[in-house]
Figure 1 (cartoon, helix red, strand yellow):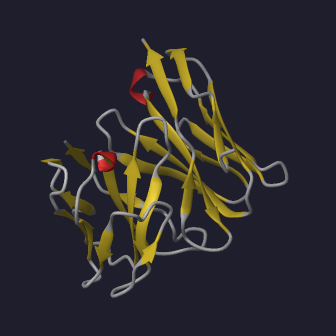
Figure 2 (cartoon, chains in turn green, red):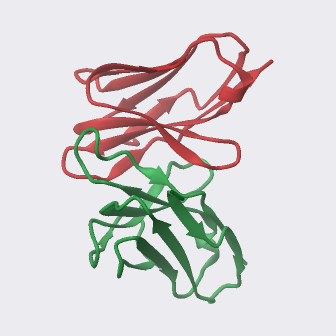
Amino acid sequence: NAGVTQTPKFRVLKTGQSMTLLCAQDMNHEYMYWYRQDPGMGLRLIHYSVGEGTTAKGEVPDGYNVSRLKKQNFLLGLESAAPSQTSVYFCASSSGPGLGYNEQFFGPGTRLTVL
Amino acid sequence: KNEVEQSPQNLTAQEGEFITINCSYSVGISALHWLQQHPGGGIVSLFMLSSGKKKHGRLIATINIQEKHSSLHITASHPRDSAVYICAVERTSGSRLTFGEGTQLTVNP
């Protein structure tokens, strides 16, 4: 089992460029999440999905879009990158809420720099 | 004021010391999570708890629901325990987690 994987691991963009981050999980989890982590701040939820074909906004959704066309994949898109989107992005997955079922498994992270 | 507050922000200890990291929260929760972020960046779940105490090896997590407070203890600390420890709460209204800023722990040999 690979768990949760993310591609790419690193990326440098210029302002205005677009890109897609891919998250894949092989644990048959229903729930998937995209977070960003910035210095001095806790992880913040960008978007999440509670099942194939569903998406919902988190705390900081502006400037990002997501899609969950297949249960195992959750894509995060930046249509027009801005320097404020420089961050480390983590994907996570879980079985869902309820004690014992919502342990979140994290991917290794993607370090994105927007110049 | 953040909904999840951790203290201290930074902690330096000598190998063998007993360590306590605190987490206070201000919202209704169904569970509290403790996670560890390794120096390389990877994040792993250590505990999920909604009451009482859990123990795994040298790590112990406790929660007091009435006081809205949790502690993570590390006994006989070791340099390999050096990491960022993150508290997160799972709200009663759903699966989303709200995270604290983390506590950077450094254990010196």
